[in-house]
Amino acid sequence: MGDYIEAGTYFAIAAGADNSEITIKGCNVDDLSAIYNVAEKIGIDFKILDKNTIKVTSANKKTYKATKFETRIYPGFPTDLQSAFGTLLTQANGISKIFETLFEGRFNYLNELENL
Image 1 (cartoon, rainbow, N blue to C red):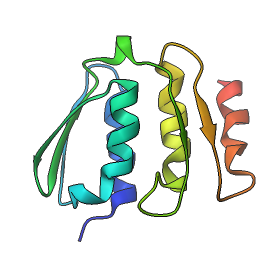
Image 2: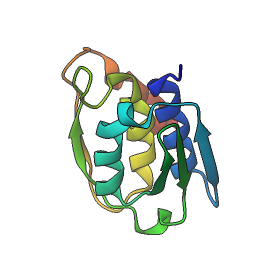
Image 3: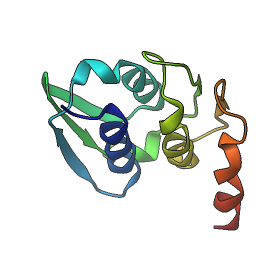
Image 4: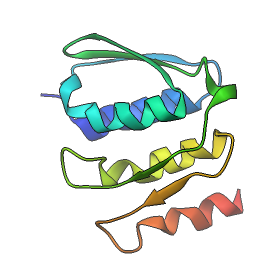
């Protein structure tokens, strides 16, 4: 059984890396619906190939748009993917807003991003 947090992490990595294309297999694509909503707003190129497989590319990276989203319990956007997608949004045009509703201190990774 696939882990939707792991699949979502690979999703964000593929969307953020230059000239990348990745096929994520062995996940239940229905578990990732909240991720798809955010990905569509950003403009990420992805395609659901079957009920267990997704293809993600960074083909649209130059045109990624800022967005806003908030974390929620399942089936909402997973708080465990907030940092991966927050980092990805550094590549988007504009100002993004992320609302963390579950864990205080979840934004601590931003200090490390500033150091980069």
